[in-house]
Each structure stands twice: as C-alpha cells, then as structure tokens.
Length: 241
Image (cartoon, rainbow, N blue to C red; front, side):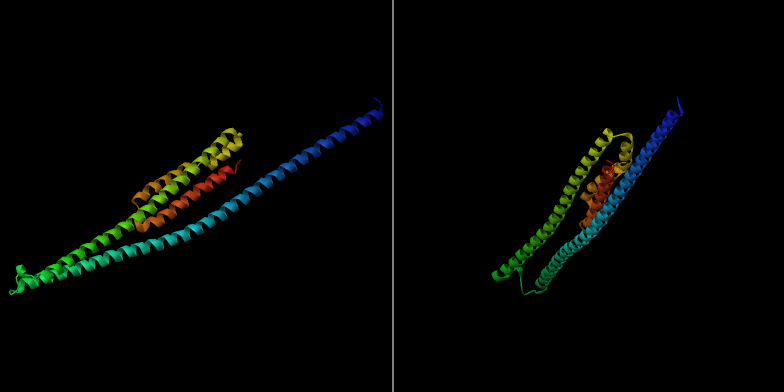
C-alpha cells in the first residue's frame, strides 16, 4: 500500500471516530434534556397538587365552620324547645298542686260540688298540657330525624368516594403489572400508603353511626381530609406512567 492510500485510510478513520463521538454527545444531551423535562413536569405536578390540597383545606375549613354554626343553632333550638316545655310543665304542675292545696284547705268547698264550669276548665287545661307535650316531642323527633338524615348522607357520599378511589388504585396496579420493572417499582412505592389510608377512612365511616350531633360536622371534615389525602396518593402513583 502506497503513502497516498495510508493517508486516505487515516483520514477516513478520523472522520468516523469524530462522527461516533458527536452522536454519543448528542444522545447524552437528549437524555439530559429528557430527564430535566421529566423533573420539571414532576415538580409542576407536585406544585399543582399542593395548590389543590391548600384549596381543599380552605374549603373544608369553611364548610366545617358552616356546619358547626348550623349544629350550634340546631342544638340551641332543641335546648330552647326542651327548656320551654320543661318550664311550662313546671308551671302547670305548680298550678295543679296549688289548686289541690286550696281544695284541701277550703273546707267549705267539696270536690263533689265542683260546678260544671270548673270541671270543663280543668279538662281544658289538661288537654292543652297534653297537646303541648305532644308538640314538644314532635319537635325533638324532627330535629333528631334531620341529624340522622345528614349522617346517612355523609356515610353514603363517603362510601361512593372510597369506591371510586379503590377503582383508580386497582387501575394503577394493573398498569404497573404491565409496565417495565422501573415503573412497576415506582408505582408500588407510591401506592404503599394506600391500604393504611383506606382502612382509616373505612373506620371513620363506621364510626359516624355513633357520633353525637354536635360532633358530626367535625367528623365529616376529618373524613374529607383523609379521602383527599388518599386521592393525592393515587394521583402521585398515576403520574408514574
């Protein structure tokens, strides 16, 4: 091989080596850009979730305040109704006792000699007292029915939300099973808290059956916060795909 051929071969080898190096550098640059873009998207998603959580927290706080005001008002109305009824009953009973004492001390008047008008008046008083007692009992029953209705609505809505979250978590697990090892591990790590969070929500729903009326608003707010936290956990798992 002459000197010209050797020079040409050396030049060609140099050009090929340079081309391979440039391709490798461009590939590394693209990979770095891709990683940077993925990190930026993840940061934007986390920032969005944080803003949504803050917004939900504010809404929960406002709803909690409204519920507490409503419960205080309902409790005050129930207390006022029960107090009025008790005071009225006391007055009526005191009057009846006074009448009995007067009847016992007034020797000139015999019970058998009561006029028809006095007997009618006594009957009217007894009837009026019975009607008042019945109205008071109806008011208390209505207040209790309203509280139970609200309780049942909270239980129903919470169970529906929990079912939706269960379905989303199952869908994420199905995607993870079909994905590569890296994504599968990332999804499993993101879903690690789901069983514990779900169990806490289910326990809170069951506990609503025994929560007192004045504590119902607080229980609903706490339950909503737990459901929101589980929703955020599943969002993070879904973002891995």
